[in-house]
Image (cartoon, rainbow, N blue to C red; front, side):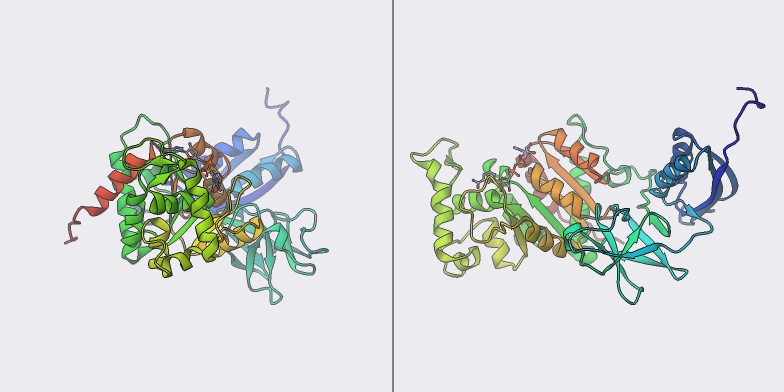
Length: 420
Ligand SMILES: NC(=O)c1ccc[n+]([C@@H]2O[C@H](COP(=O)([O-])OP(=O)(O)OC[C@H]3O[C@@H](n4cnc5c(N)ncnc54)[C@H](O)[C@@H]3O)[C@@H](O)[C@H]2O)c1
């Protein structure tokens, strides 16, 4: 197209972005996205930090042919931390009913975000994707609120104006699993290095630098690795456990009958009437009232749930349509399960998801992007699904859970070399 025929974009906005925008590739991503979406940019100022630790800064104008196109571009680059230089306060509107947001509500992501009120930026608390943002009456605090929890009259943020995202800055020059993000999905990559990095992250968390959440499915028990898992609980590598009825049921079945779904854990063969074992296990716990009661009365004396009770590790067993029984500890109201999980997620820094699609994706939706997530599953689709649903920070390890846990426990049992 000749210059004379070229239609000048007439809608524009001046943006800025700062932080580790070079190493983490945020700036190239922003510029690429502007072009991909049909916008244009004009860079005015780029200051690159002298050392790797110094933050960088860029200011640029984004233009587009229509207001709608500009809005689309601003929304996309906003997710990478680009915010208007001349920001306005966010729009607030009282919720007109309980249990639903006003139309046009701002929809949160899992990236840390701030909103602008009376000229000041305040962080949104309880960052979580797919929520609305409610501001308290004094207009000094804001929090993510799930749709079902909003109350009539609460002040809700409307639209994207006056919001700015603080994206997780991953150092792409770090050659470990957590630097690359979502890079180890392939079943054909070496796993021992990744497991070593996972062990290091778990050790650091246990030694006071974080909190570990484990989300697990019944394959942990079926594959004969529940004693490895129990060891993790016993040794302090689990601060919170999320699972469903099945993990706890088959763990307890193994303690009572030495089987998992009727299969002997010692010789791998089926046991006469073994298919009833898990029902008899659930029934026994139901008769006592809770898993804790079974431990306190000396009925349950080994396994994952036993260790959780013994070590006072909070757990959520979230109910599902598939559940037998269920165990009395299972929370069958999904919104109540979610609320309890949300509460326990707040200060989690590391999450290991093992062999459950249902619970992994549910928990992925609750965690902010700053939490390191490792998803271990035999099916690559589970990891891909997590990433597709927004938990892009997930490191995937495609493997059978048993060898994974064996190598992880081996790694954690190795003596550590004290740093000089
Ligand atoms: N009897 C019961 O009460 C019962 C039985 C089964 C499931 N449930 C409930 O149904 C819900 C869904 O169950 P779920 O989370 O097991 O199902 P799910 O389908 O969501 O996840 C199972 C995952 O385990 C993976 N997997 C299977 N074998 C593996 C292995 N050896 N190594 C690594 N990964 C492996 C699969 O690829 C899959 O991703 C849960 O709430 C569960 O408690 C209840």
